Amino acid sequence: MGSNFIWCDLSALRPDRAAKFYEDVFGWKFESASSKYRYAYCGDVAVAALFDMPPFFRKIKMPSFWMSYIGVESVAAVVSKVTEKGGKVELEDDFFGGKIALIRDPLGAGFTIYEGEIEAGITGVERGGLRTGHTLHVSSQSAVKDFYETLFDWKIVSADEKRWFVSDPNAGKIAEIIESSDEERNGYEYWGITFTVENLQLAHRNIEARGGQVFAETYHGDRPALSVADMDGAAFAIVQCDNN
Image (tube, rainbow, N blue to C red; front, side, top):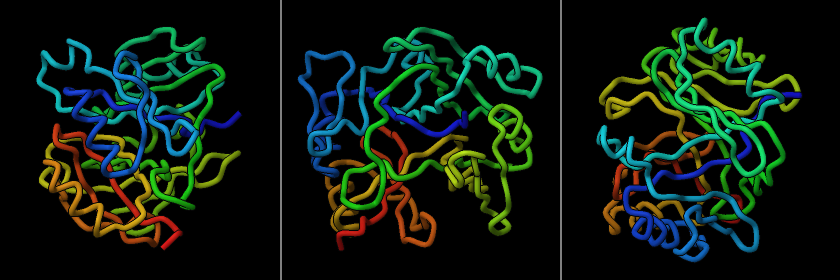
């Protein structure tokens, strides 16, 4: 079994405001506010979720953040390798009938591994509102390369001097790594998620009009993209879908 990206969710400082923000930007529809874990739907398929940020993260004054989930055959087997490779296991728990562990790599970028069955949601670039990629934004690719290759049997190969492709033996290319300055990353080491929009420039205006930020023009593969954040600091990227 390979280790591929299967899901994402948003730990939100203001869940109701966040739901409205993403509805306006992506056209998502969210489950009722009475749900603690609210699924975001693109059409009739769940593509992401959001929930109220836990007290621990509020206490350390974290901004809202998107979390990438990686499917694994055994959480225990992955966790057993983390510490010796310079990472940290933040927690282990049950999650929707499966098991999860929240892990930080040697530079502090967090991600979640999941063991079990989960409906991963649709991905791609065919229309707006889809999850279409995951990118690790770090200060040093060499500081984390061995960590990820050991944990997941991934292969990390150079695309250029600041960009690397991540490949899984079963799924092929599944992610990218971008090395950048602290200023470009706003001081954070993190896994970012790329979503599709129907119109890149319209989404740019929508994000800024709703209190978000547009940081930089970038690329997702060979497609023009934008690095952005919502009104509570959750970073992500957007790329135009194939419809236009």
